[in-house]
Structures are given as C-alpha cells and as structure tokens.
Image (cartoon, rainbow, N blue to C red):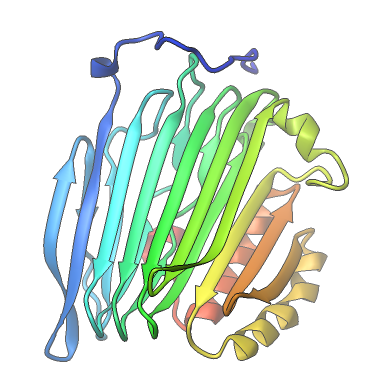
Amino acid sequence: MFAPPVPAASEPVLPAYVRAAGGVALRFGRVGSRTHRLDLLESGGYRARFPTTFDATSEAVLINTGGGMAGGDAMSVTVDLGPGSEAVVTTQAAEKIYRSQGADTRIETGLTVAAGASLCWVPQESILFSGARLNRRLAVDLAADARLVACESVFFGRSAMGESVARGALRDRWRIRREGKLVFAEDVRLEGAIAQTLGRSAIGAGARAVATILIAGGDLADRLEQVRALAEEAQSAAVELGAGLVSDLLIVRLLSPDAQALRRVLVTLLGHLTGRALPRTWST
C-alpha cells in the first residue's frame, strides 16, 4: 500500500499541459470602520470565498476544487493588506499532496502587510502521501508596525490508514522581511526515507506531524508566556512544544507522533495567540 521510492526526474513523465496550475490573488483594504475585499483574481481550479463576519475583520477561505495536488501541479497565493486593514485567510480543507511520478508539487505564498495592518495566515495542514514531493515557499513583507500570525503544518502520511511516508521529499522555505530587511530565513529539506529520518531522536523522535507558528508585532513577551502556559497541557497530549523570541519574532514549534493530537493542540494555541476562534472550516 506504500509507494516505492520515486526520485526527481530530469524530464517530466507527463507533459506540463496536463498538470494543474493556478492560484488566488487577494487584496484587502480598510473602508470606513471595516476591512473589505478590494481585488480578487482566481485562476486554474483555485477559488476564494468570503464568509460573513461581524467585526472589522475580513475572512477569506481558499478552495482547491481539484481536491488535492500531484507531482507537477503548481499553486500560487498572494495576499496584500492595505494600511489599517485586518484579515484572516485559511483553507477549506487540508491540502492533500499525492504521490509523484518524479516532479515536485509547488506551492508559493506571498504575503504583504502594510502599516497598521494585521493578518492571520492559518491554512489547514498539508498531508503528504507516501511518495509525494512537496516544494513549498512562503515570503512575507511587513511594514514597521504590521502584525502577523502565520502557521503552516505538515502531516506525514494518512494516520487513519496506518500510512507513513516511507519515501518522498519536502522542501520548505520561509523568508520574512520587515521594511525590506530580512529578519527570518529558514529552509527545511527532507528527502528519501522520510519516516526513517523523522524516527531519529535528534530530528523528530518518531513524529508524524509538525507545525510552525510565526508571530510578528504586538506584545510578544505576553504571547510567549501564553505558549509556555500551554506547554504542559500539550506534553500530556503527546505533543512536543517549544517557543522562543528570534529577531523580534515569536517562533513556536510543535511535533507529535499523533497528527490529530497535534491538530487539537494547534487549534487551542492559535485561539489564544490570535484572540479569536479559528474559521469554521477548521471544525467542519
């Protein structure tokens, strides 16, 4: 039931025109006392929907009508917040990354947050099937007083089916800039026998799910105390949690051998850090 090793191919197995490519571009701005969607561009099989909110914040839900991504597929998301605006952007469901025949699945996200604006970027998890190859990039440009909560999580295999990612690849790149200055850079690369690599005590200690939360702006010391207060509860749920301040950013890491346990802790943690309930798609 598990995929055999599939190396990256120098030539695509299938022509590019049969692969899915597209994305969503969003621009928000403050109009009066509320944030409104100003521009929306949709391409390929990707869409955005906007649930009704009852405060000054606008909410967007990204939808992949194809139901998942395979090797050679590409998605691009850009979110641009104007001065003083507030938005929450999430996804309708977890993003399934299917087995590749050799090519990478590519996801590129660009977030721009202007002066006095606040963005919560909280997509649901990416689930890597055995044999998947995911190349994901996140680039963020922040104004001096912009605020951001960004979360990305990855589940390695479908735990309900007893699957592990025996072979595959994950490349995850983060670049965060404040007023054009690089303040955070990180690259993660796992390739080959991922389950075996994650089983090593110094890397994942058997983890099947990982998540990173990055917070910029606001009272970071207070939020750090909130995270530490939840650490004992997380540990009792078999979730390892660590947090620290780096370059005026709060970085939180979570990993667990139980994907659903990590998700439950993540929901609680994000609720505390954002001061609001997560979008309803997280609970449907």
